[in-house]
Length: 122
Length: 115
Image 1: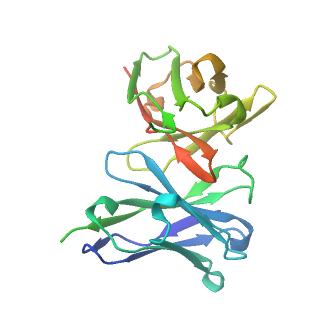
Image 2: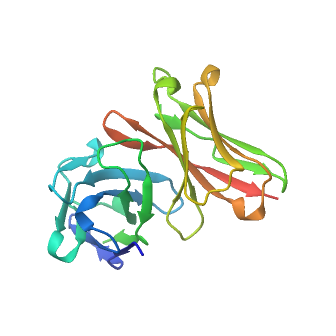
Image 3: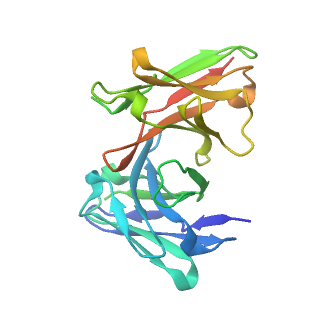
């Protein structure tokens, strides 16, 4: 069965970087794009960007341009999202999500990771 | 002004219907967008419900009951998620989403209370 298992909670100081992993299993890793979505406590969903794990191509939300990097390691079927220059505003649960139809907005997020809490505090 | 606006909360009784709106910002025509809907329960990631573009182009999520349906109100420039025959298990947060300016944009979410 398809599973996306994310790395554990992290506590970071302002100005630091965090790297969250998302390990996929149960399907061909390179066949589906990954997206990253975050959610601050009690708040709504915020899309951060996408990555094609086959080509490594990425697309980032304008808000995060220059601060986010999405990568992958195909040998271990794992996607990564690294966010730098952290502030308290980045405290949130970060989700990876699989997109069903590469390059097609008519797809949807069918599988999600369990979420990784990132806390930014001095 | 936000791209997508959803009422923050809505209450309805068991067995009744609930209409959740997702209003697009002025200048963004709902007729040209596919509206995606997700349900999120506390402590869990969102789950896909459905996509609505038109009556001839819509998609229901796998295992999603038919009492969840989508539509558009062109006069209000809004997407609508209609939930009929409300059940206690429908109590959740609901988010709309569109692909706009090369990015996925979520509405702020509506907390649906079934009481």
